[in-house]
Image 1 (tube, one colour):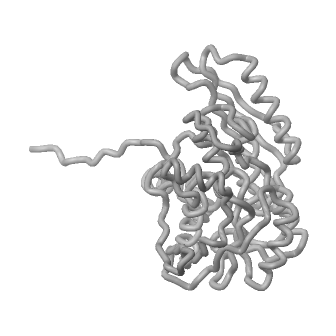
Image 2: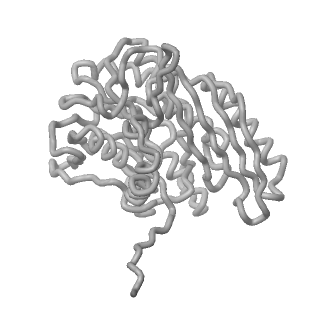
Image 3: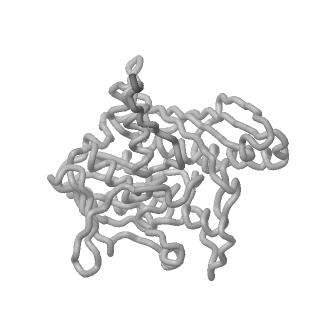
Length: 339
């Protein structure tokens, strides 16, 4: 009797695209199913002993380890800090796990660790625990870093995709595409008129300023792998609403735009490490733009779109001549090993 056919799945380069989402939905989410995971947020929001906490984790495999404007150490700290911020939390503590390849230079490791120390100080967090493992030469590509973080939520808001409402304004904190293009230019040894530097930065200041101002924040999302387009699609799908954005309102520097055109990339899908979207009631949008522009890196902020009742899960982009097209998740990884 012939054996039944079994469809095999293999793992490829992931990170913010459709393939990664399919992997999560097929392998991880069904097995680990719980309410925190189903929130589909940048971290878990947890309650214990009368306190509300945010908890998140991220692994960093960026190549090269050092690039214009940042490095793997700064990236590891800011990536986890920013995920906590997107939950509306004040970041407090981080862990750091290091996977080192045999023969990795101690001087390089010291440089990375010093960068992490400085980034943690700038973000107001403390690295309180960690782990180190060494793998055989040729099995680890130098260095991988995993960080996890805990923050405290000091308000009553539920800042999450499920809080998004039709009519909300979508605000972008600054210009797009710097991180991804800094990595690409370094890898490809490309020279431009001016160097493109990563936008890697902590987002503690703008988020805390928005909260202090008493604004009714519905959702925050940082624009890492997959960029602005993928982030908005994820939010629209979870909220079961539609989002429309205006291409002319999305800030992209001429240098980044030119580099994207040269390399066949679209700025809306390029990774960022110090940019976020803020979604809140339209009546509060102008005030939010002022607060973010004053406190966030890469500003000024801009209102780039609105949330619509439907079709559920759809994101559209209106171009400069008024035509609209549907944006989807990135179908593949434009740039692997980006963070």
